[in-house]
Length: 111
Image 1 (cartoon, rainbow, N blue to C red):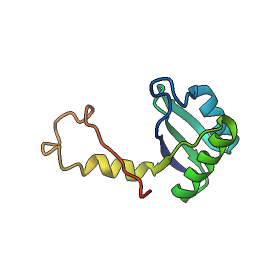
Image 2: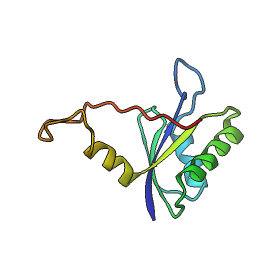
Image 3: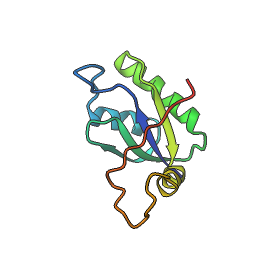
Image 4: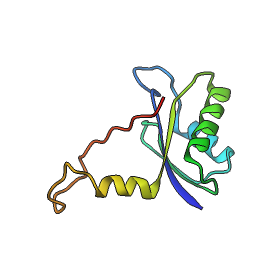
Protein backbone atom coordinates (compact mmCIF):
# COMPACT_ATOMS: atom_id res chain seq x y z
CA UNK A 1 0.00 0.00 0.00
CA UNK A 2 1.25 3.48 -0.85
CA UNK A 3 1.02 6.62 1.26
CA UNK A 4 -0.07 9.86 -0.40
CA UNK A 5 -0.66 13.47 0.47
CA UNK A 6 -3.50 15.24 -1.29
CA UNK A 7 -3.65 19.00 -1.53
CA UNK A 8 -7.06 20.52 -2.18
CA UNK A 9 -7.11 24.01 -3.63
CA UNK A 10 -9.59 26.67 -2.62
CA UNK A 11 -11.57 25.08 0.19
CA UNK A 12 -12.44 26.82 3.45
CA UNK A 13 -11.15 30.17 2.18
CA UNK A 14 -13.06 33.28 3.31
CA UNK A 15 -16.20 31.24 3.91
CA UNK A 16 -16.26 29.72 0.40
CA UNK A 17 -16.27 26.05 -0.59
CA UNK A 18 -16.62 24.99 3.01
CA UNK A 19 -15.86 21.36 3.83
CA UNK A 20 -15.51 20.15 7.39
CA UNK A 21 -12.54 17.85 7.81
CA UNK A 22 -14.72 15.05 9.20
CA UNK A 23 -16.81 15.14 6.01
CA UNK A 24 -13.66 15.18 3.90
CA UNK A 25 -12.23 12.21 5.79
CA UNK A 26 -15.52 10.38 5.21
CA UNK A 27 -15.15 10.89 1.45
CA UNK A 28 -11.64 9.41 1.52
CA UNK A 29 -12.74 6.47 3.64
CA UNK A 30 -15.64 5.87 1.24
CA UNK A 31 -13.12 5.63 -1.61
CA UNK A 32 -11.43 2.73 0.26
CA UNK A 33 -8.49 4.84 1.43
CA UNK A 34 -6.96 3.90 4.78
CA UNK A 35 -5.39 5.71 7.74
CA UNK A 36 -6.95 8.99 6.60
CA UNK A 37 -5.65 12.04 8.46
CA UNK A 38 -6.45 15.67 7.72
CA UNK A 39 -4.38 18.67 8.65
CA UNK A 40 -6.41 21.43 10.36
CA UNK A 41 -8.91 23.05 7.96
CA UNK A 42 -6.36 23.20 5.14
CA UNK A 43 -7.68 20.48 2.87
CA UNK A 44 -4.39 18.62 3.09
CA UNK A 45 -5.00 14.92 3.67
CA UNK A 46 -2.58 12.04 4.24
CA UNK A 47 -3.87 8.57 3.42
CA UNK A 48 -2.92 5.11 2.23
CA UNK A 49 -4.32 3.20 -0.73
CA UNK A 50 -3.57 0.30 -3.02
CA UNK A 51 -3.83 2.68 -5.97
CA UNK A 52 -0.61 3.65 -7.68
CA UNK A 53 -1.59 6.49 -10.02
CA UNK A 54 -1.66 9.83 -8.16
CA UNK A 55 -3.46 11.59 -11.02
CA UNK A 56 -6.31 9.04 -11.07
CA UNK A 57 -6.58 9.15 -7.29
CA UNK A 58 -6.95 12.94 -7.49
CA UNK A 59 -9.64 12.62 -10.16
CA UNK A 60 -11.60 10.20 -7.94
CA UNK A 61 -11.39 12.54 -4.94
CA UNK A 62 -12.40 15.54 -7.06
CA UNK A 63 -15.42 13.66 -8.47
CA UNK A 64 -16.60 12.60 -5.00
CA UNK A 65 -16.31 16.15 -3.66
CA UNK A 66 -18.31 17.44 -6.65
CA UNK A 67 -20.96 14.76 -6.05
CA UNK A 68 -21.16 15.38 -2.29
CA UNK A 69 -20.79 19.18 -2.12
CA UNK A 70 -21.67 20.41 -5.60
CA UNK A 71 -18.50 22.32 -6.41
CA UNK A 72 -15.23 21.59 -8.18
CA UNK A 73 -12.06 21.47 -6.15
CA UNK A 74 -8.72 20.92 -7.86
CA UNK A 75 -6.92 18.02 -6.13
CA UNK A 76 -3.21 17.35 -6.39
CA UNK A 77 -1.92 14.02 -5.06
CA UNK A 78 1.74 13.47 -4.23
CA UNK A 79 3.31 10.19 -3.16
CA UNK A 80 4.95 10.36 0.27
CA UNK A 81 8.44 9.46 -0.99
CA UNK A 82 8.20 12.22 -3.58
CA UNK A 83 7.30 14.69 -0.81
CA UNK A 84 10.29 13.50 1.21
CA UNK A 85 12.52 13.97 -1.82
CA UNK A 86 11.22 17.51 -2.30
CA UNK A 87 12.01 18.36 1.31
CA UNK A 88 15.42 16.69 1.25
CA UNK A 89 16.57 18.25 -2.00
CA UNK A 90 15.29 21.74 -1.28
CA UNK A 91 17.90 24.15 -2.65
CA UNK A 92 16.84 26.93 -0.28
CA UNK A 93 18.11 25.16 2.79
CA UNK A 94 21.81 25.14 2.09
CA UNK A 95 22.74 24.17 5.63
CA UNK A 96 20.89 20.87 6.21
CA UNK A 97 21.44 21.23 9.96
CA UNK A 98 19.01 24.19 9.97
CA UNK A 99 15.39 23.73 10.92
CA UNK A 100 13.30 23.51 7.75
CA UNK A 101 9.97 23.20 9.54
CA UNK A 102 8.97 26.73 8.56
CA UNK A 103 9.76 26.29 4.90
CA UNK A 104 6.92 26.96 2.48
CA UNK A 105 6.64 25.08 -0.79
CA UNK A 106 4.23 25.80 -3.62
CA UNK A 107 2.98 23.11 -5.96
CA UNK A 108 1.73 23.91 -9.45
CA UNK A 109 -0.48 21.59 -11.43
CA UNK A 110 -0.21 21.11 -15.15
CA UNK A 111 -3.72 22.52 -15.64
